[in-house]
Length: 137
Image 1 (cartoon, one colour):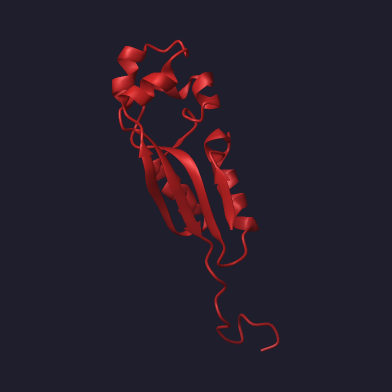
Image 2 (spheres, one colour):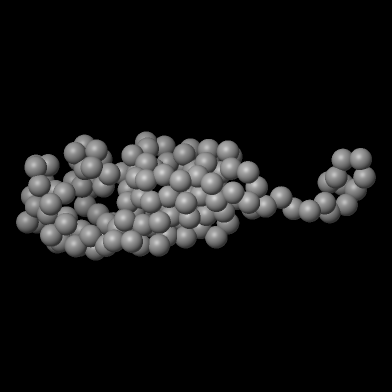
């Protein structure tokens, strides 16, 4: 099993992180992390803020992109289960001190950032299927 808490969003190469996670898991192994995930688009000013990257927000993957990357890496049954949906007051708190116009931007990201459990499973090895796939058959 691979577990982590708010790590993928900090990576500059998320595709590589997920492919590497898949590679190191044994067949049947599980990927189970907690991370920040985005639902829908967010203003570029948020994505480009270094303070928000450090704060685990700006680098978060969009929900559908996360599922696509997990599938691309080979995971079965990828899922995202929200554990917290951030409201305008939460957005205002993490935007404070970044130089971003809090009053203008916080309402634009209402409900778009979530904390979530992200899961997937590496397929189990297939059983022997005959002489073409099993050595010595």
